[in-house]
Length: 406
Image 1 (cartoon, helix red, strand yellow):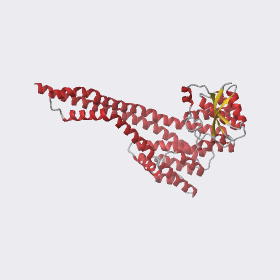
Image 2 (cartoon, helix red, strand yellow):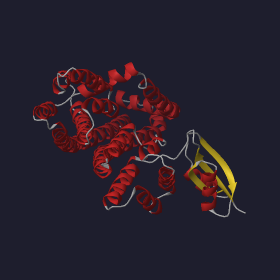
Image 3 (cartoon, helix red, strand yellow):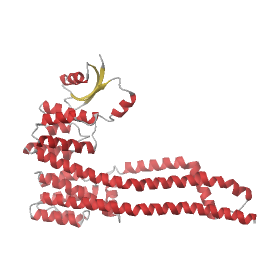
């Protein structure tokens, strides 16, 4: 009888792994359920090494990517909107899952729902895939009997957030490749091309120009200590990331980021888009303003903005409104503050926040395009100038040899 490596969640919420002998995968899953566990994965124990590496999940249960969560939410919203009950909708998602990871999480959710657990509680068993914001919205939708509209708004929120992040990331790929190519080309010239001429200069005893000597010395340093320098850069990056986990350092960094000349303006637009989209979704879904602000505070991803939202929450609790303390913080664009104030005055805070999100998302996309349009020629010019400088120094040295021979 074949063996299956299984991963399951106990009623206490602990992850257990075991090898079970069963006729097939379905029988192994059924055995786990008879033990009171929630199956997460069951795969043949004889899977290849590469398949094991691809399926491996470090640190516990399977984790869905942001795109997979957005697709899951949209498809579930469509199925429920078509009149399917939650169990049949989840079964459809299990059958059409694009990969084993999504299938395992969806099957775990379906098993929990079939056992009488609420959908929000079932989602809470997968904190690595579903955020507190996600679970809170689903809980509110279940309580209000509006799961379809809740999931539809949640899917839109996830899709817009993912689209904005993808726009920024994809736009930065080309400048990053240019920088890497520039560093590689300069290192190649210094360590491989320039040293070929050093014996010729030494044999003729010519006095090299200062710029040529500097480049030769730089190439020698890079050739000897290049790997150590690369390791030092990696360690420095890791040290900075570790330092940013400290609240005080992260707060100072986030404030500095928002005050930079060009990057700061773009960061403010992206922050305003994320904040207003999340706030508008929560308020439009019927969540009270105070609870919505506390949830948004965890989702903005900027410590300086979190402090401003904490002050705004205290102001809202006292009945003084939301827009004034946010405006005093100076972290959000004026347009955001104006639209939020208008929403408060007209009792349309949710729709106005969503309208502000659309404006800031578009501004962020345009800002990224302008930044890339500026960076690419600047980087190209710097690359050309650096290579031209190296070639010019080499030519000056060659001319000095010709003068000596003359």
